[in-house]
Amino acid sequence: MRTVCALDGLRRGGAVDKRPAFLEVCTVTKRYGGLVALDACTLSIATGGITGLIGPNGAGKTTLLNVMTGLVRPDSGTVHLSGADITSLPVHRFAEMGMARTFQIVRELGSLTVFENLLLAPRHQSGEGVGAALFGRRKWWAEEHANAVRARALLERIGLWHLADQPSSGLSGGQKKLLDIARALLLEPQLILLDEPGAGVSPPLKLEMIRLVRELRAEGVTFGIVEHDMHLIGELCDHVHVMAEGRLLVSGSFEQISRDPRVVEAYLGAAA
Amino acid sequence: MIPYLITIAILVIIAALIGLALNLQWGLAGLVNFGVVGFVAIGAYTTALTAPSIGWLPAMILAALIAAALSAGLALLSIRLEENYLAIITIGFGEAVRLVILNEGWLTNGALGIANIQRPFASLTEQFGGDIVFVIFAIGVLAVVFVALEGWTRAPFGRALRAIRDDATISAALGKPVFALRVRAFAIGGAVMGLAGALQAFYLTYIDPSQFSAIVTSYAFMAVIAGGRGSNVGLLVGAGSIMALLEGTRFLKDFISVIDGVQLSALRLGLIGVGIILQLILRPQGLVPEARRKAADVLAKPREAA
Ligand SMILES: Nc1ncnc2c1ncn2[C@@H]1O[C@H](COP(=O)(O)OP(=O)(O)OP(=O)(O)O)[C@@H](O)[C@H]1O
Ligand SMILES: [Mg+2]
Image 1 (cartoon, helix red, strand yellow):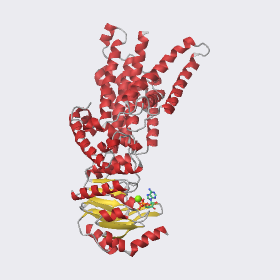
Image 2 (tube, rainbow over the protein chains, first blue to last red):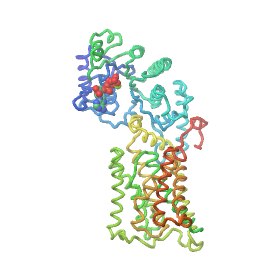
Image 3 (cartoon, rainbow over the protein chains, first blue to last red):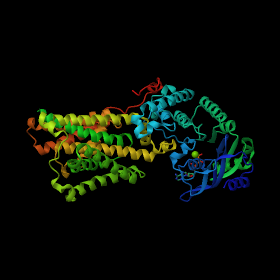
Image 4 (cartoon, protein in one colour):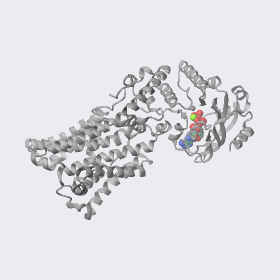
């Protein structure tokens, strides 16, 4: 399977990422009625890297992210995580496999406070069991405390600490975006997929976000980032995939793809 | 007057149990249940039928277990579907239970119902007279249920249910086993409804299908809405005030001579309806808002949860 995907990429894209793939999407097709959102799309996200995913509006980036995280089932094709086929895994198992994601249009858990949003995320919470919730109180309370310390540090970093006890429904759009990212981080994932993390976030906090992503990468976390902000992509990504009309158009380093005439054409074509 | 107050107290306790159960299912977990009365009836009939042979405590436990198993089964069948389908299926369940009770006479004695149900601590009751022993027993059941539900609500379990209520997709993406958590919440709620039915059978010592009409479900929803979705304390206040309004207004007919009893009973229900609507306009979050964990509480030194 893996060789098939790699060859496919070679034929299409030009410069292939030679590092081992953490997440691989193989010839995934997704149709919505007559519309082909993903058209035999094949690409991969390299272990330990920051992979960018760009393309004009409607190129299929969000749909691809949804397929990668089990929210959308492809009509055909497969998704592999570290070589294991995860195409038909139930959604909640993806977090267990070490994946986390954020959403382009943030759908917050509005009746939970900002802090509760974060406390919700960590994996393996014993207090979520029916029996342990009542009879293992000491244990889950200690877990809560440890999670709370991490949550506080993150909130301070993204400038939301003073809103910790506010219902998250009251946050501004950019703040919700930041909360979404912080929540994903508390899952302690090995792979984080961000769907337009920079949209609506103010420049200073965007810089903070870039710093945060770099730090986590240094700790060994892998990133996949969908973004329209080319500055952010250029700053962060060591490999970029360009999508158009549900297919992988070009991939390579940021310098390579930004020189590629096909990329310019795809963006201009979409605008025309 | 005292016996009348005791009757009201027990009716409030039963209504509160049913309301607490619905508050977990619908208030906290966002799972609508229009078949509440069906689970209460299952609990009542299980108790009435089995208590003579196995004793009151095993009968109550059995009532809770059977109601829980049926809830879980119903949830397994329908929770994957949209909320609207759960509404339809639970309505159907409530109606099916009523029809079975009415028509399977060999088991339930049909419309005639089951009489002479022995209360727990029957000998003590004779000794102290009246219903005082039973009130204490009922308060004990309510207290245990309340403490357990409050514990679940404030634990990570309850928080996960609230998250699922707000957005199931996000919760799943955060690794919460949405389906399993929903089934558990629905089953626990069913068990508590079964217990409420058991108390009702013991208290009235007589059950028949007419006691299990859809109005029981409506009262439960009123109590949850009035008290505040997700708040157990609010639920107690809500159930208490609705029963107080319902029962208290009975005496109106002694003071108002222009309307007769039938008109009055219709008027009482209407008053509650108006009250609920006014509340939804003026205080939509209910009398007591849902409890939320304060950051400072969790950040304080690890200790027993407050
Ligand atoms: N649930 C859906 N039902 C119908 N069509 C859909 C659905 N989801 C996506 N599409 C269509 O699939 C195509 C790809 O959408 P997608 O959201 O993946 O684009 P995108 O690359 O993320 O765009 P943007 O940059 O604007 O976020 C679009 O034409 C969109 O209309
Ligand atoms: Mg998108």
